[in-house]
Image (cartoon, rainbow, N blue to C red; front, side):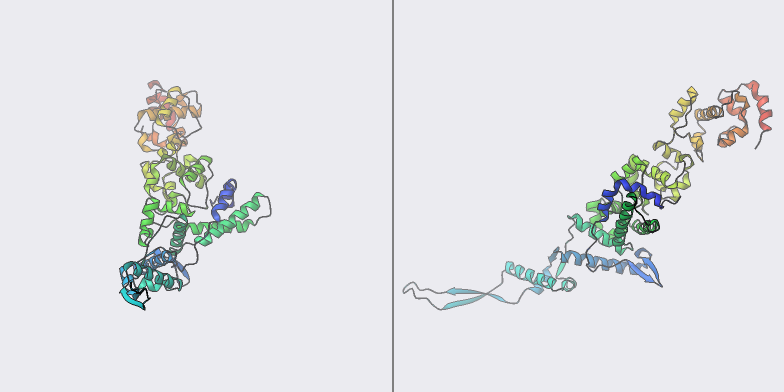
Length: 445
């Protein structure tokens, strides 16, 4: 089943109040920003697909628009050049009145001129700059080098605005995505109230959300750095694009991820950290995040955990996670609570009490070959086979039994001999050899 299907709406219903609040975040205002799309013979391309010279030019334009944005909200500094060239060429007039002591007769007004003080120059230039900005001459001031912008990331609203514009510049459509999620929440509400719902439209909205998120998940550290936002990424998001997207409302937070793993209800309206084109391996330092990623993989593929293999990890962006387990799906499933540990396996074999609520490594599609050199594991697997088949006489077990139950690799350790496997497990005696060899080789598959 396709993970984008309408069935995936159901997990959203309990979270509707939060979901609706998230979709109503306002988009950036209408400042003239550069947009990261071009048209080439009717085909849309993103910034990363353009020639290097075009990317440099586009990045320069984005930085320019970023400067204009901050200047127009009052975050700028007048340069020395600005004070020098914008200072008025006038003198301040001092008005004085003479008053002789002898006759107390008021004398004519005296006037004197003096240069403007530094404080007066600053006040005059500042007033002039404010006036020019109001008159729409911001670009002129910037181009002439009279002012420079001062980035101020203290306000969350400002950070979100700029991140959204960066996404737009890189080819995503944040405003459109917000609108789609708003529409989706309304459709979900109608469905929850058992009102007539346009299921076709709901499917279309889900698919378009996924297409937009596909562009969003391509954002990297270099995108921030090359577009003048490296300082923002470091100072507020610990150099993590995912953290920036969390605050902007396009990625799941760590708490949301843990809750999804706990309930088994994952979402598709935002991005998980492992879905980024460049997943930062620090995410896998926390056991809860690793387990959540494994749970998500099983949820997405709708597979029995024992069927999860190496390719499943690699084809779904989890190669970095698999590397944490030295390439072993068994080790990953073990940490996620889907498989028995070696100690548990040996305990089950000792008591001859095997279970079915989790997975034994030999039940996986591909058994971890590194376990077969362990004699105790080989014996446990052989005992498990006897337990599973419920045969009263161990010597009745054949090669076919091993192979049909996924133990071909184990049998290969004994040159294809069931007798040798059972003998090592002390389940048969040397006197059973001739009987088993004759019977075993007559039952080849």
